[in-house]
Image (cartoon, rainbow, N blue to C red):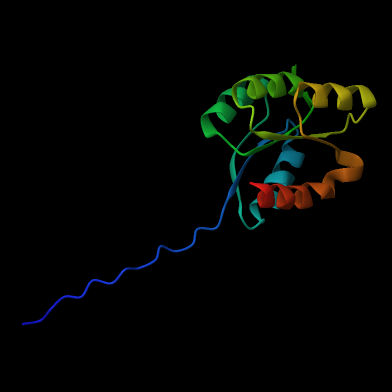
Length: 138
């Protein structure tokens, strides 16, 4: 008689994935961001949007770990999006990425709850290292 021997198999180690949502009204910059983030190991882009109302609904549905958010959006403000999502998802990390890197916008975004504020002109390339840092702290 053949005896079946059960062996315990350890589950494969799952690589932690940081879920990112991008809100950017410029199609060119949005595509650049999606391409850049899509090439990062351990990062999953779970959505993107170009308007505030669409962004809020889709972010709340997708439940990302990180939102990359432009300050100025067509016919609205990224600060509105920031305020709305932080009210409902306090733990989400928000990185403001903008061409309007004035001290006034920086202060307002940080007051409303953004964790980071980057100038597209001078700090665009800091986004990937910043996401790597956030991945390690999740």
